[in-house]
Length: 75
Image 1 (cartoon, one colour):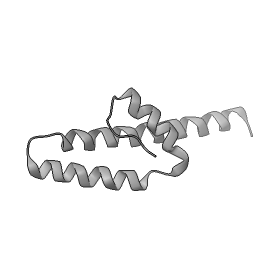
Image 2 (cartoon, helix red, strand yellow):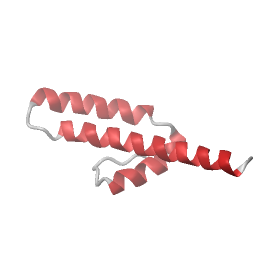
Image 3 (cartoon, helix red, strand yellow):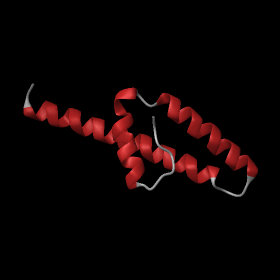
């Protein structure tokens, strides 16, 4: 595999993990709001995101969640 192809693959993986973590953080922000409907929406969104993350990306997403100081961690 060419070095540029490997670098592009690593970059895509990095971007996908970062994007998942940002979506989780945004859902958490809704969940911590004061309006009950937004809390419910945030909880539903967070639950859905946790089920959609590919198993192979979970360790990387967890690292981003730590960087973002999110409360959620993936198992």
